[in-house]
Length: 239
Ligand code: MN
Image (cartoon, rainbow, N blue to C red):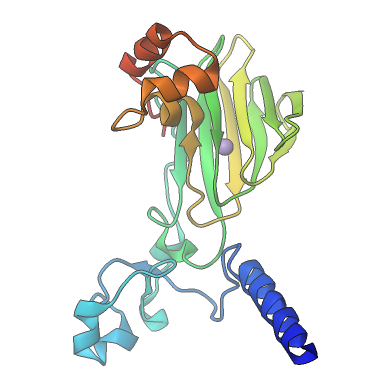
């Protein structure tokens, strides 16, 4: 009986520790691991075992380039000074530099984005990053920003001007809205090499295939005609 209890405690501790271990990007065990899509393209470990090349799978992150072949280009990107095109229905544009744009970010748990907002109401609509906290600094303009906590759903907001910084905790719904009469520009750091984004309205009303309208009518307290209308709209991806 006591042995069984000990086993149970050990099992629970093991389960907890492994869930912590896998809850975030893993700490790297090497200086870097420049991402490559094809293990034949400089993947020195797998190159030694030809059969593995064709059976290799992506587990978490990407294959690594031979560190001796890594160059400055693997760790850099040029053009974040160029404004994104905000001519869309929400009036904003996110230029995200994740591991797909900067392969040297692989395993490092960080990425960066430039967000442009059109004057008078450019909106980065309510969205979440399933894998990252976001820290944002306003370079130009005036943004009304906020996030909503998990239940009970408390709204936390602030108006930001140039030089102001704001944090959006991982997984929470958040938004940024240009309330000024000029363009606004912000830079965001994100605590994942691949933060991911789920734009709430797009996911709910613009999924493919569509969610059964009865589900959305009840969930959002809407007439089914309104749900049908919303499901017919074009939900822009501002990324
Ligand atoms: Mn965000």
